Amino acid sequence: MVGVLLASTASGRAQGFSFESAGARLGIGANRSSSAFQQAEAFADWNLPWHWDLGAKLDLQTRLDLSAGWLGNDHGSAAVANLGPLLVLGHERLPIAVEGGGSVTILSHSDFVSKDFSEPLQFTSHIGLYWDFAPHWRLGYRFQHMSNAGLGNHNPGMNLHMFALTYRF
Image 1: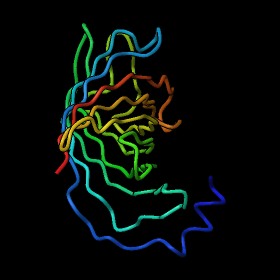
Image 2: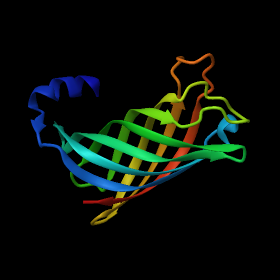
Image 3: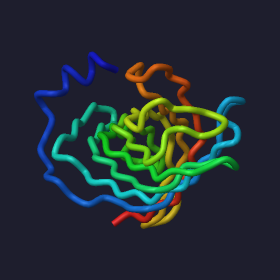
Image 4: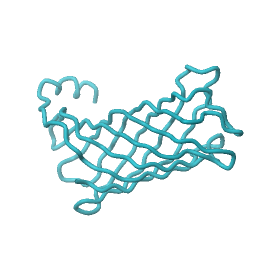
């Protein structure tokens, strides 16, 4: 895929910066060390000007994702905000797409009784699928990992299953 992307970069066409969608995501812990955590957030996505036609009716779209919300468990909570790029691989005739990305994440509080994230600055990466089930509506799932990337004294990280309902403009 990387070879295809690099080979296709020259044929990438600018489409401009445009508001694509907005919605809500809810998440639950994905492993034992994260099982007590939940996350809820509102988000908005913008199409970025880079888009590649990969042939065979496949395309790769770049987007910018911005979210703000709540992260917590029985022992505390924090505000959470994310900003970062997405890559979306879709097929012209299928309502399903694969999405992946990474973001800079800020926590208002990083020390929970059950887990100390060490730093308010975190990094979140994810991979997921979404389904455009109606003309303006989308359901999504992503597996995401948040950690401080070794910037803190320790790096416990956290994995979440995130589910989304999105309105497409």
